[in-house]
Image (cartoon, rainbow, N blue to C red; front, side, top):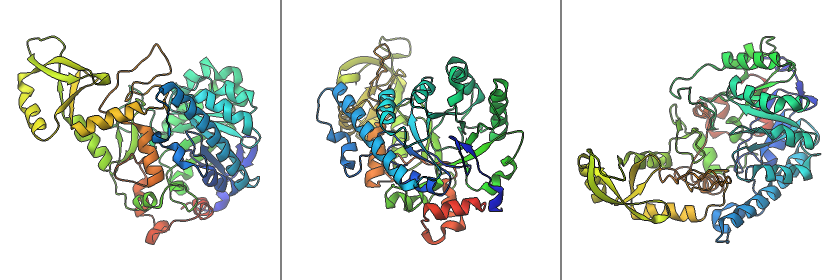
Length: 469
């Protein structure tokens, strides 16, 4: 594929290559990686989802919060997130040297997202050019970005989702819409926007869905020059040649989330980079263990296998005896209160076997089941809940919620995502922590570009991508 075929398009007010580094949270896309991408003439995206404060990465760990009051820890987290986001924006700006575009990525369901956005943008609006945002329905994104004269880029997985955002909020601030990120819910890494009407086991091809999105955009008067970022499953441009300069699709940019993980400038630990080179087809799969409530794509490592095994040790219970569940049983509800429930005699054999194997603690779940864990696992679950900093707007693991009228019942089948993502991003423990990755990640091990364990620079990667490789 000739480099000349990759023609610049207008993104955030200037002509740049239609090549975008996708923003990946919890210190995975930082100022250096995004600034280096922008320096090559594309769009670099750093994550402001609890971004690290340079030189003080230890402040990211939950153990660094000393207050016993969760709302105070939450306020401290927001303060640290603002400082980290400002720091990464400055690094990105300095690294880009005025080339390309710099975007900032946030997750709408992150805790204190509006405070974080205002805190960062009030200080860096002259250093960045746009804000991308997904994981939820970011209705107020347009209003916030318009206040700082910045373009906004909602991340959606269907035309239907964008239509809701448009009608409720974006139609009033259309001049600040920089583009729409279509994130394929079956191919992208991290959290995915599958709706209740979509089957995670039956992937749909992206082109008809993007055509539908473009058709909707045209119907409400959005110019074809406003780009759609195709995100999820992007590896080689040569595989998307019929999307380039396609009048039916309008302006298209290609967002790379997985490949920028494996660069010299990528901040992830070397152990993580080496692990990427060993992935095989099928290693990346969708799972339902995220406390956000969204499905997510990650490497099926020891950590995910552990969560799956824990989830399989479940039985139904009732609070009052009925025809099926007649046997009384002691279980722990939230806040470690002991509660008497009733189980089926038919489940007694399984329970006895689990208890004999050390899984002697029964915990009540929101699904009217009991899940069985070891005493040590129970203590770890309670420890993580006690250290909750409110990193999400609502957490189905800890029961935290910013909305007093919506307090989710803590689910012991899930996990503290903040602790797990910090663990892998700082220590590089790729087996015992959540390892997000796109479904094309196995190609690191088969693509000749990465032969002999090669870890390219961002410059080398962008050059290879422009050639179609």
